[in-house]
Image (cartoon, rainbow, N blue to C red; front, side, top):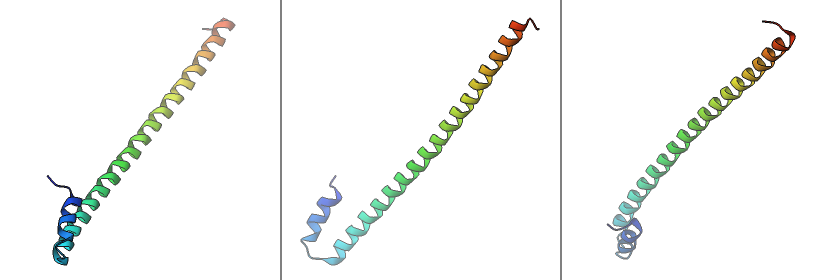
Length: 82
């Protein structure tokens, strides 16, 4: 399988603008598809990262709540309460 660059090198020397233009159009389409795929992957990664931050935030809230409850129970125990 040849690369687009190899194809273009062979066609450029024919001096046939129609053939060159057809190859350039194919390359542009491939490049556009690649850019779209990269953009989709970046968008998915940002969404994934937001999920991580949300889970981390929830974990911190739960940890702080647990620490406050432990302090409250310790104070009750020291005071001799239930």
